[in-house]
Image (cartoon, rainbow, N blue to C red; front, side, top):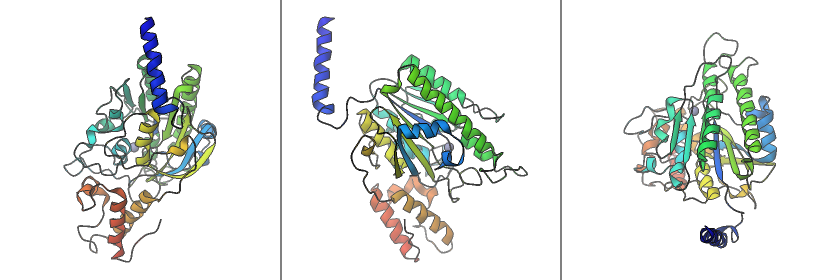
Length: 373
Ligand SMILES: [Zn+2]
């Protein structure tokens, strides 16, 4: 036992020399919790009373706008080998080139080789991104009465954290997205208006906020908070009329709140991209970056200057939308289309993200349609 203790101390020292003491952070977090609030639009907490989210923003870093590729929902096919909406595999792989062979085997959860990883979700829609999670728990979404019971996801997550101590856990609460979809039902006071006073989206936002607040409090009560990095974000945003039709504004922008161990407090940053999340998790947790990742590590979370970055994803979305406006009669087969995202890597740019976006912009130039940022 003695010897083992000494060995551990020596190993710790080596780790210290290798990383922490020469790097910018102390020791790595014990765990990262990726808390996905389905369909959370950018600025939600500024329009709906969400005291827990707002308080947490004061304790962490808030990326006000996080752009994702237009949140289309192509049917699973050879062109689109996923059964969930586009942003989810993009989030977990850190790339927009999600049709490449091997992407499914290189999602962020697969970078973890030490302790278990876990994925808890109250919807059947996300099985395509479950590969490689040690623990996968799929719960029913339930009925909206008077809210979708996202508490199921949070409660099971707490059980798993207690019993299995995962190094990385994705908790997916589907309720807010579900409530947004209800707003598209006809003949309601809130039809096509998620911001209506009686809108299920508003009601669910307050509900998920209370669950988030209780979850953070639970982590603190259990003495787990000090070792935790918590990331709260939507998998996509929400259109004002409800749901996330790919060409309606709102669905392609969510927000990201990061708080906890080693994270700066009370900082707001205007822009990030959904592909930045996976490589940032890998960097914070000191595991390997996912093989196909093209995203930026959000190093400013722990210190240093906030870099000025190109708004590529935002530009890509506006190019895709401009193409849609031009219509099929004007465009040829090379026109960028979100439905073909699974084949985007097959072009001459391969999976070079900046070159790909630039090529799409040049394509639209031909029509005098280049859209700015
Ligand atoms: Zn979703």
